[in-house]
Amino acid sequence: MLGALVLAKLGLLDNVPACTDLTTKPWVVEAGVQVLDQPFYADGNLATAGGCLSAQYLAAWMIARLAGIDAAASAIHYVAPVGEKDEYVARALDNIRPYLGVTVGGSSV
Image (cartoon, rainbow, N blue to C red; front, side, top):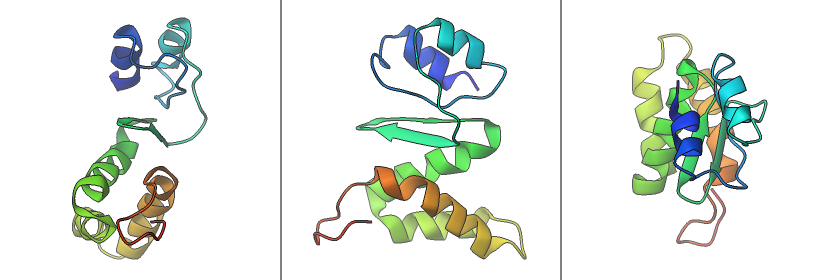
């Protein structure tokens, strides 16, 4: 995945750490970005994910920001493997929740 590298080369990751896959990591580091050892990170409207299989976190984060956490959970549940749906939903929400901020109702999501 080259997302973090493209963001870095465009200057959009100045002073913002990022996640990326292990193959792309040296190029992202060379571009001056601190690479985190975690599957997902977001700062404001920028989000990065570390590896192809972490794309579900990007999708869940976008859906949660646009349509709410319940919509994100529903979308991940729909695409998760049978027999592993609850674990996939929990893992996705655990990874994105710290980057969602506060909901309209005032409770943190």
